[in-house]
Length: 277
Ligand SMILES: [Zn+2]
Image (cartoon, rainbow, N blue to C red; front, side, top):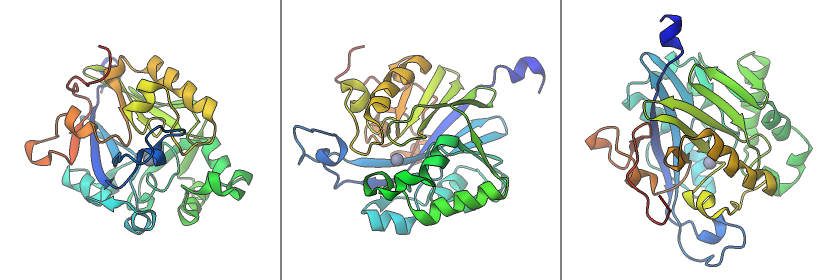
């Protein structure tokens, strides 16, 4: 690849809907929610980015035992989802960890040749004094944190400062809020810059209404993250939350047989209801 083409890499973005919790209620999702008992399904995603032969994986999904423990349903093993789409986990060399909650780092060992990238603040957080408090540690699993420590000591986990380019066209940006080291991923695509908000946005509603999600480390950072996402995405149609059940109806499937399972987030969404255009 010459220098000119290297500066214009455009990625396809695949979102694998690997899990779901249809029993989730609004009161579990939003702070000071007016209708706490109304259902609001929580979907679970992991992602990968593809440009020619280059594949970058973003988060690894949730371990099935952890899913059962936390009351979520696994639809497809995340690693099987990658294989189904032609991604060989052993061939993945770059893996972005947006944060270390159990639904994002459940399969680190499935990528034996990957280098992992995570915010330094997240590592300090998950191995430091805030974990004495149940409120802050409740979405972390200590055995998975231990895996991160092992990867760090093995030289395979690279901790970075707040903004970092991972590859041409792919950068990560600290926003905090949901957890101390929450980051978002900005990806150049054929339709412009898409922001995978990861858990900086679980639902479109947080972004649309400016309301905080119920799992929080720092509320001011969480709300300020909405502005950072707006800055980095080409439009509101370029913003992708991590857990919203509307994603599968807004974005085209990767192929007709993958309807409801794998979406193409680099392609434009259909218009969303309830939001000014
Ligand atoms: Zn999550």
